[in-house]
Length: 292
Image (cartoon, rainbow, N blue to C red):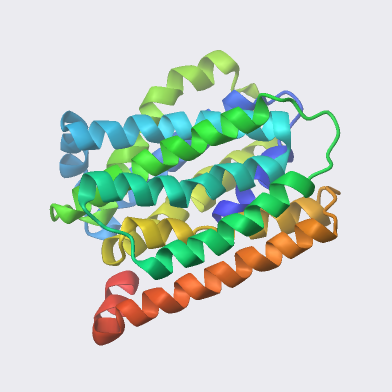
């Protein structure tokens, strides 16, 4: 749900804030937040920084920078609903296939079914859902590039956790490195908009709520579930983003798109039930691990 507020929040930024600057600010603030909170989460800052020198840790950090910039470029060119749906909609399939190839996490049949139901709903939403004027044809391409970056980051993070590295250290490592990469981008793109009350509120919400808090929760879920199901469950994001786009920003969804939203919700419910069933034998331990 926190992820789903990203696009709408970005659209409320001052007019002087470009999409590149907004994406860079989110990662810089979020990376600082995760790094600062790491000791409170039981992690080591030194261990997090040491991951930058590993292939998987470096890849995770670079991919966070890639998908942030590509996502906000997609939002600016295609609208909140369409860009969010394409970015997060492409994620589960890409995560499932990449984790199958690299982590040997073979997707279960019910994962294919639940993901297929979600993706069918996303097709209806993206083909008929957003009627926002002024959309740029490059917007969907940026959104898909963001989805690919997100998928690679997720698989890299899961690989590190499979090796026994503490989830908060993985999150802090990736996002602090991504923030360092994008700090020069933020300065070049212009950070003056953050000095206003509106700009500061946008930057803090994007950084601390949709990055620091959201990715702590994401990392704890990823620690106890395979990468594919986690990516499917995160499809709650486009539902939240779509509702905010409709009710707060005036974007329009037709009847077909609403049917698509219902399919996404059904797929999420199925994947949630599958995840609980798959971990039913050790459900108390799973709940403790996520909440610890």
